[in-house]
Amino acid sequence: MTYPERVRIVEVGPRDGLQNEPTTIPTAAKVALIEALADAGLTSIEAGSFVSPRWVPQMADTAAVLAQLRPRPGLRYPVLVPNLQGLERARACGVREVAVFAAASESFSRRNINCSIAESLERFAPVVETARAAGLRVRGYVSCVLGCPYEGAVAAAAVARVAEALLGLGCYEISLGDTIGTGTPLAARRLVEGVAAAVPLERIALHFHDTYGQALANLLACLDLGVSVIDSAVAGLGGCPYARGATGNVATEDVAYMLRGMGIETGIDLEALVDAGLSITRHLNREPASKAARAILSRRQAAA
Image (cartoon, rainbow, N blue to C red; front, side, top):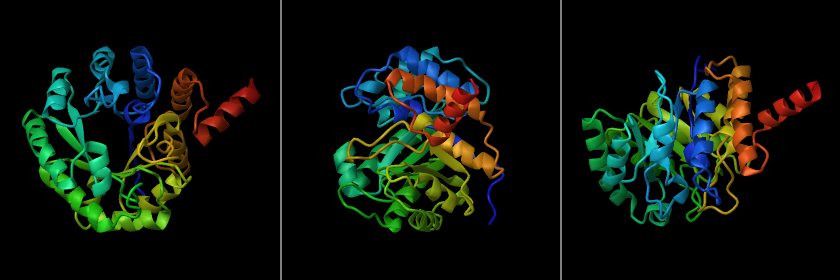
């Protein structure tokens, strides 16, 4: 097996991880989290989204968050945009990278964004075109790649069609999301192999949730195929409001620990990353979901 020498981790905790929290998180706490993640070595951190605050109230302060972040060379703060209005709000904040999102499941697409897959792609076409014309990078997300809460199994061919369409629109990278975390290693590997027939491996990212505790195994099963970009959320933040029992994203601490043990470079300071996760989970009044973080915190306590 040949694994990549380096993996780029896209931190999604401040957006995907916090967007479904039931209680309002102060802007200052979000800013502190993002700054701590940057201090820990993350270079791509999702800072929020410009969706309607009526649907996602937790992201209503994204503009305020962006305004308070310190500019750092080589650091990207991508945001999610659902339409041209969201894109214009992002551009007004000086954002240099945005993301659009589609689903591989018709039922999920209709429940999540109230339109078919084809309609969603039609909506995104002018968004991507306008963003690229303005010099912005655009990332594409595909949801429900390994299962849908309404339809069950999702065919790899269906995922490949959506991923290829997003690539054709002009997305520089396609993130494959196991939104409800039902995937297992062989299924994940076969999915990536299927999508790679339509999208180059170097333009594929993996976004796996850990509902059934399979996310790390799923990532490992795909790494030697040539994928070298992983989405994760500090402290395992997140979940899917459309899938009962779905837990958060794979924890960034766990991914960083696994990759370090494999000799794969990430540029992340694991101890500082644990501190970043601890600060936000204390604010949320719960323990980090990351097993690596819990072990490191236990070791610190014993040493003290």
